[in-house]
Image 1 (cartoon, rainbow, N blue to C red):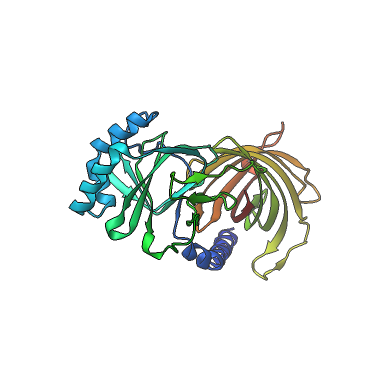
Image 2: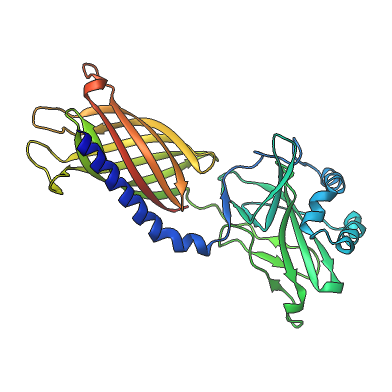
Length: 339
């Protein structure tokens, strides 16, 4: 038994190492850190709900603005000279920012970035521009209403623009590729709204585990789809096939053991890179003298390098089955694509 457990763990390490290597280059090419929820460390409790509240906050948080301006006194003075009469616009939707302020439980102000909001909740934000003609740059600032976390959206180098263009498209800070931020000489940027797309994504996971009765090692391959439910919850519908493996020979083991088929439905809570969930499922018989089982399922994991790494436990829920004699533990790496 101990040897089988060791082989399963070794197999999972190999799978996770290969998975991380495959996606490492993609992660390096994307400099943004994904955030899934706002108001976790708000700059101001209750956020900002009006332009006046935003202006009061910006005037109060001079240290935040100073950080974004590199503590350059001339830039800071010019900022507060222009800010009382600057136009403030609003938009709804995901965003990317170069740097975001936040305030933790210890009341200390911190900065993180670049970050990209990828949560399901639709976010309302304020946005404004402070131009610096003397250095040929414009600083754009964004503040989500919900948390009041003043952020540096981007710095635009005006010297690189072509004078003959009437409309200049800047790199989008909106996470969806179909959204586009457009800057015009006057007024401030416009965010073009798009129709919502289907909230379905798809998944494939590979892994292995130990199925009991009689501790048997299995290699697993599963697929399915995910439906988002609100901003932090999702429904997972997963179907799998699990092959009995003899790790001593490295060959499939069909000696009185059957290929096991599973079908599951789970509700998953995903507040950040960590996630957990529970649900129900069904698995086919493992051996000739066993029967199919209805099972309760628990899953816990984290998103690493854009891959969900997880551990899953399954126990029987039908009458007459003893948990100590019928349980399953799986480890795996899950790949997702789509919305």
